[in-house]
Structures are given as C-alpha cells and as structure tokens.
Amino acid sequence: MSDLFEQEKAFQPLADRMRPQKLDEVFGQSHLLAEGKPLRQAIESNRLHSMLFWGPPGTGKTTIARLIASYSDARFLTISAVLSGVKDIREAIEQAKQFGGKTVLFVDEVHRFNKSQQDAFLPYIEDGTILFVGATTENPSFELNNALLSRTRTYVLKSILPEEIEKVIRRALADIEKGLGAMELSIDDDACQLLARTCDGDARRALTYLEIISDLAESKQITCKLVEDTVAQGLRRFDKQGDVFYDQISALHKSVRGSDPDASLYWFCRMVDGGCDPVYICRRVVRIAVEDIGIADPRGLDLALSGWQTFERLGSPEGELAIAQAIVYLACAAKSNAVYSAYNQAMDDARNSGSLDVPLHLRNAPTKFMEDQGFGENYRYAHDETDGFAAGENYFPEALSGRQYYHPVDRGLEIKIAEKLNYLRSRNSSE
Image (cartoon, rainbow, N blue to C red; front, side, top):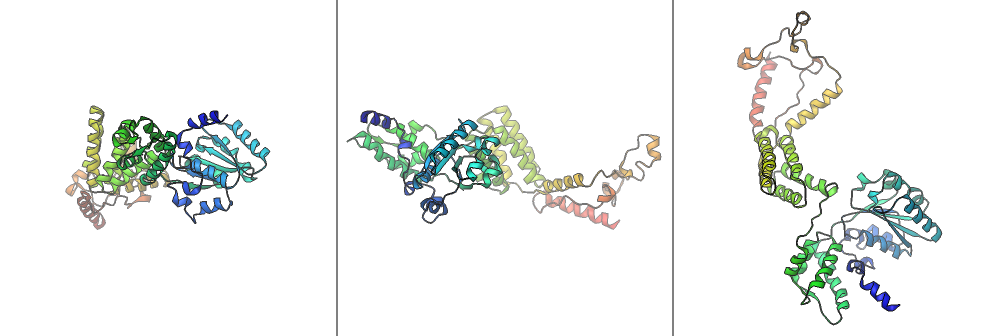
C-alpha cells in the first residue's frame, strides 16, 4: 500500500504539491492576507461569508478557498462551471446537507454558469447550507447576476510580482531536491529572474515550467539558456473576449489621448504580441483620430486611414509599422474633442426636440405649388454675399435658433478656425 501511495504522490504535479497550507505561505496577495487585513481576520476568527475571488490565472484563488475550509474545519467541495450543470450543483448541495456541518463550496470559473445555474445557489447561500466561494477571471459586474453579487463580497486578486514568484520558485526547488535524493538542483539568479518574468504573474505556470526544466537539467544546474529553450516565449495574458483585451485597448486609447507616444507604442505592441487582430486596432486608431484629435490636426485621420490601408496591402509584420506610425503621430498631434462633443450635443437635440420643421427659406421649391407655398422664399445664396457669407441668416429650426455646439479648442488648426468663427459670429450679431 505504501508503495502505491508513493507512486501516486510522485505523479502529483509540482504546483499541487506546493500549494500553501498556511496563510503565511501565500505569496503575492498581501493586500488581502497581510496581518490586520479584513479577509485574513475573517479567516482566522472563523467569521466567514460567501465571497467571490476575481483575478488572473495562477494568483491563488483555489488555494485561498482551500485555506478557508482548512481554517474553519469545514468540508471542501468543488465544482467547475466548465464541466458542470444544474445537476452537479444539486448533487453538491445534497452532499452539503447530508454532511450537516460547515461546507465550503468552491465554484471555479463561475462566470461560465448561465443565469439559471447561478440562481440555483441563491437559496442555499441564504440559509447557510453552503459557504459559497466563487472564482472568476472575468469582471463579475459584467458576468454574474446581481442577485449573486448582492449575496457575496468580491475580493480582487492581483498578478503576482516577479520577485514574489522568485520566492515560489526557490521554495519549490527544495521540494524537487527531496525527490532527487542526494542530487542537488540549483538555479542561477539570472535564470530565476527570467523564469519569474516569463510566467507573467502566474505562480502555477512558474511551477509547471520549473518541473519541466528540472527534468531537462542534465547538470542539475538551471541556466538562462535552459529556461529560454524550454519556455521559448512567455505567453502574455490576452483574452480576445475578456477584460484584459478591453483593458489594453483602453490603455492604448488613453495613452494617445494623453500625448504619450511611448506608452501608446507599448500597449500597441502588447496587443499585437498577444494575438490581437491588427485590423481591430486600426478601427480604434481611426476612432481616436476623429474623437481626440479632430480638426485640431485633420492630417491625423488621413494617416490613420493610410495606416489601415497599408496594413491590408502589406499584411503582418510589415504593415504593423504603418499602424505604429499612425499611433505615434496621433499621440504627438494637437488634441481636440470639440467635434466629438458638438456631435453628442447635436444628437441629443435631434433626439429630444421632436420633429421640428425645416424653415421655409431652406426648403427647395421644385414645383410651382411649392413655390406658391413659400418654399425657398427669401433664401440668401451665400456665394452672392460679401465674403461668401450671408450675415444674420438662420439655418436652424426656429425653436433652436442660435444654438452653438462646436467650440474650437485653443490648439492646432482650431486656433485659426476659432478666429474665423468669432469673426463670422460677430457679423451675425451686428445684423
């Protein structure tokens, strides 16, 4: 029996063997688990509540859930929303009822459950049958029902810093060395740092890589070369349908708006490197050109469209340089959201002011009947006026006469535009 047990343990993945057994062994979530923090106090005092853990992969969501059960002497049940349905939820609830004591029900990837499946937990959270602990990599406010959110407290887990992952790696080496007997396994400082950086804040990934690398380390010395050969290229977090995607495109947009070409380039490269379709970025760059640069520098829109067209002709990776060029130009260009704001205000009036009639003098009169009705009467043809401008003319419906939506900013080409508009408006007011 003991031999069989040892064989089973030998096949246990390193990441599972190294799962922390105490709160002090958890790396990277000090904002939640440091001395005096509310979650730690709740766990240690056994005053627990149903909760959600929201954070990237490999940051300790499952580990903390297990520790909650351990510290409270509760039974630990787990189901995965990827593989389970309502039937599995009912079976887990039934087990909790039969157990009679405190049960922690850990639901991994809870955002993958639909509304009815999420609702199935509600009565048992309320009556205390289970202490519900859900884990999600997606924003709960978008993916989970309000009813479930109102019955739980959400804790945000952060990516583990490289220096913390280095501690995880070195701690794991000691466990590996035990399995090697008298043979020692060591890792260079540079190699340890490289491995930690490559794992992108994911401790589980670090331990998985370390386990593979340790099997390949013929000299029992883990070097940078061995790490590079094994890992090849670190996989940065990028989910085309998830929060990371929208966070990064938001960072790109805000960096351009903030006139930081370097940060703009960084986020562009992060998205391309992560697998984002460059055409999606092209569409956003065109949006930036019209929303945040506008008439302050109309060349920005031309360059954004040219970058898109160039990418479609050249493809990747050559065409991505054209997109980068457009992004840098937009980041350095004069900024104005005057047209964007004017459009929103005009749209608001269009939606809320009803079906106001077009003034008669602005209507065409293609028939004698329409001419007799006054269509086009007293219209002033601007080209026949001094400076090509019909001073005092009204082009709005009467109820909106005098509206001003567009207010040029004191930047770029809009400085000149503002001067002209001020001149024309002064002529209007003098009529």
